[in-house]
Image 1 (cartoon, one colour):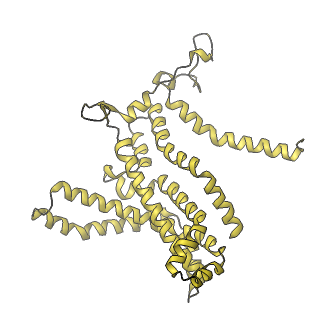
Image 2 (spheres, rainbow, N blue to C red; image 1 turned 180 degrees about the vertical axis):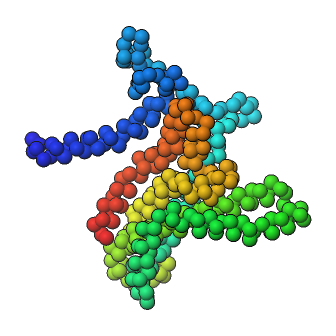
Image 3 (spheres, rainbow, N blue to C red; image 1 turned 60 degrees about the vertical axis):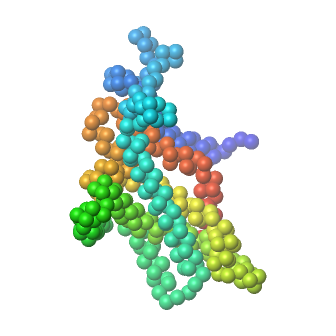
Length: 328
């Protein structure tokens, strides 16, 4: 089957767009495996495969893990299972923080969006349409415009809880390390609450469109068979709306994983131990303005988990987006 000129042009345009999008990621991966001499080579080299007489020789390619070693920073430790421990803060501090922020926020947003979407889809009450319009309007407000108020909210929360921590410390109810850990967990929970408030409105609209597409007769049949409203929701409606819930989870997951400004302002600037991975990469720029292979290795390690999540869930996600577009 021959391609028309229009189809050929569309295919070439799609290939060009894919190349433009993939090339920065590909070049970052290649850069992460270079050594310092190849990074600073003049003129710049995409592949470190040059020799004294040739610009490119496949047998002369040089790839190193210097950048990853400096990020992971493995140290010998006979007390550990494999004889090494990881001292790199990206791996042992920032990435675990990000995993906690993303999974906690995504689960809460998905749960609240599911409940709210079901109520907005199935019940009529005064002010319903006005509330839905308000929720839609909130989705257009950037997080950046609310940061000053959110920062003040966090400061007030810290001031409110400070007397309790001071009293516990004075009475030796908890150790100083325990109190420090409690303060840190308070800030983590506050940050998760901020993320939930920011990502929830859009998720409500996504999930509601899936509930709207589920026939009300299915619930009525379940009630006739003796099911309670809770059983009908959990056993019949929720499985049918699962693609929308999965889409809400994934969109929130990626959004929180890539979020920078709130994490940096709320906890990253004052408490390095609570920073997320994106803030951790930003922190590396102060000491690695020349060692680009180190920054590239950090970027690869940070983007790898979210890429893997999408690779394993891409079919469900794109099916959910397609169904949502048709059903909504």
